[in-house]
Image (cartoon, rainbow, N blue to C red; front, side):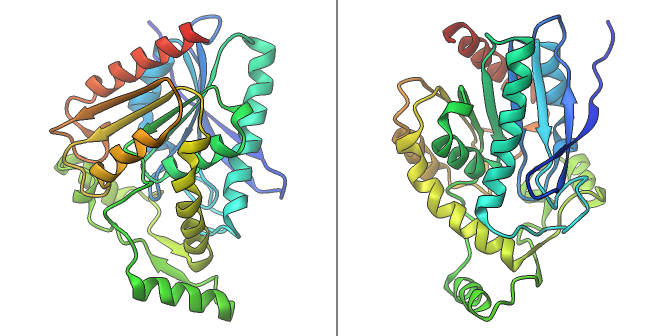
Length: 290
């Protein structure tokens, strides 16, 4: 059997920025579903090649988008002008994917899948533009996190906004790879990965703060099927608060999986096939329901 490999592509959004993304073509003639995937605050599409390949082998088209200023997007590294730009990037990419879906396999659902920080962006996008998303998958979503800015950091952000000092770069407070995984091999991967994002601008942090606020209200506006996956030993996500968030989704079709012995990044777990199998099974249910 031929091994599926990713195709590196670019997508130009409305302000002219060229977003890199990876296409994992579905095995078979017609994709069972089209998956638009969003990564975390520091990661990029290259962190998730195993699960992307597994999904493609199961018959799903995977379109893994690198966020502007992240991954293979070298221009304006770690920067974004405002939260609407982040949302609009995803909206425009989703619209393009749906257009291609309508031509190639119009009966196939479009699923917005996210990991970690990308969860807040996915939830807000789905709430704002529900016609673009047929199902939402939130893998250890960074909507309610343990790592939060204190009052002094919030004060400094507000002061920087008032003074217009928004292009300054600051370190991302997740420098310890052990926050992501207990695997020494994967910790070394994170340390050595030149595409891992290490810094963000004040402008990005301000946009992130606004996304945090918008994400708290998103569950009341999401009616499509929702999947959530949580890692039991997560040092980044506040799991009790995130379970409460899951209960707030008004969707009548919700599914929660928990992996008690797993660290934050399920992709780096020794038994990662467990979560991928569950993800494939949920996607199959979405396809049948649609």
